[in-house]
Amino acid sequence: MNDFPDLVPPPERPLTPLQRDRLRAALPLQDAPGERHWFVPAVAAAAVLAVVGGGVVLSRTLSNDEPSPAPLTGGPRANPIPMGDDGTMCLGDPSRTVVMMESVTPERDIVMTGAVLRDPQDASSSGAWYAVQPPGGVALGGAFAEGVPGMSKLEKQEWAARKPLAGAMLEKGKNYTFFVRVTVAVGGRFNGIAFSYSDASASGTSVMNLRVSGRHQCS
Amino acid sequence: MPDVVSDAATVESVRRGEREALAALFEQYADRLYNHCFRRLGDYADAEDAVSTVFLTVWNRRQRIQLHEGSAAPWLFGVATNVCRNLERGRRRHLRVVAKAGSIDDGEAPDPADGVTDRLADEQRMRALLDQVRTLSRGEQDVLALVVWSGLSYADAAAALDIPVGTVRSRLARARARLSSTEGAGA
Image (cartoon, rainbow over all chains, first blue to last red; front, side, top):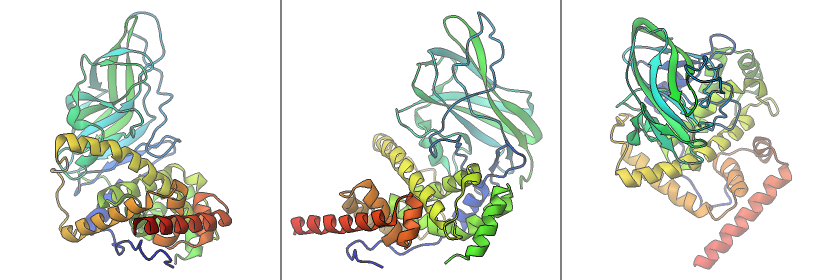
């Protein structure tokens, strides 16, 4: 059927084998109820790890992080930067160094003081940054290899405009993306990333609850 | 056309959380969805992103997958339509970054099987078509893309967009009239 003769699109093309491999590798691998299993493919090294949390595709509703640990100082206050829910991720050869991303919208003005891996075993971080997202931007989360195909997903989160996380002053209601570069050895692991913050009355941490392990092969 | 029996069985397995079934659904529909998304976005890389997001959405919402006369295609195309819409919004600001920073995809390794020149020509042609249809309402564009470009039946397009079949017909008729008048005015 085409009664729109002036609107004939280019002929259909199948996915190339490389595209197909990338997409297959990005399919969510569900290991257990309630867990998202994210996978960085061995060949393409560029998993797409969009987080969809029951809202509009790619625009995540941020809610209900695990309760923040008791504030380090001052009285207890709600976590101002709630993060996504639990997940697991395997990093396979040759991409066991990736940039983890998390999108946040602070519920009050805060100053970020750092980001550390939780319970790291043969795992380390080598940088933590943030970038401001324009209003209405697309919230992405996950892990992406740097400098390889798939980089565009980092770029779309303003990766090029990133600044050091420590000392960052975040404003209530604005959208930000956090980036943390991590490396996990084969057999290594860590249990999420703790982002520490302070404000006028208290300090605390908010946790990105993603359990990450390193293996030669992740399938 | 997809085998409706296997679609029902596959979808049931996806709902039970069997990831192999998701992979089967991917193998069955990825190419069609990729081409549909390309025809909404005019960019093959964005179309690939969109397909990835569609299947993540399928998994996250697997209990809500709907079959239409035994086929998952309408529901999948409906999800793809929404995903492309969101990507398009995101891309508008991405393009602003490109304009400021020059080329930002320098790090992308070319895919040897890409046929880069042909793809670039296709993208240019598709974007020119998309410029033409931007005179239509969003709903008219959705119907045109599903029925005329992706070959869905009126009934399947109606299921994909969750609208009555009559609305599909009327939107197409309005699109035809509007494009004809634009053409006439431009002649």
